[in-house]
Length: 257
Image (cartoon, rainbow, N blue to C red):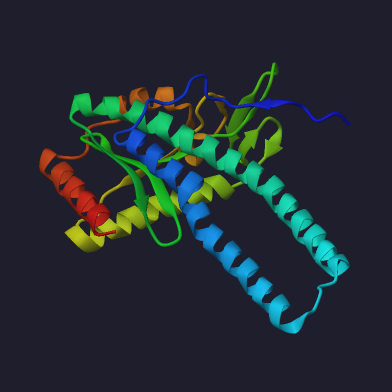
């Protein structure tokens, strides 16, 4: 069966971030030089040690054993690199998706909203948080590949989220609820106030169809371009002073991590 070609849902690369050129230079130094500088002394120390061992023992090593060991190690490393390459590609797409959504959300600052990115919890992270007079919103970004030259659609109904016919069940929804619950508890413990948190899951580049009943649509599932309208159509429930209070404690938490 021929494997269908997949493409990224992102139509264009996200904008560059502050310090990105410096980070790329750091990465280049580490990848091209730093690792070599660490590896080379160990290699030459090993060769030097083997030379001295041959000198004093007059032993000649068996090349067959070394050849077998080399083949085993090479095969193992090649397999690891093959799977690691795919993993890195997935992570890069996820990273670019979060960047694209994050940069899109930055436009909300014009309205006076506070926008936070990549809030790290215990063994998880919240991709984005928006603090607005309309409330506090936890945004989870999912950047999934789309099938090339085929219609790609996400359906959100009472059974969960279905992506191109594959029902993911409640897994993603539970993740979003857990992140909102964590933020709610964090703010309660640091401010003494209980804030309502709205969860949203966004799929950049996808068409999202909502078929949920009213009692099951407590979590928003949508394309990120629809998010400002959803927020804007929500009633203003957060006084300015509470908005500033929540923003301060979120930023303080981020700076302590």
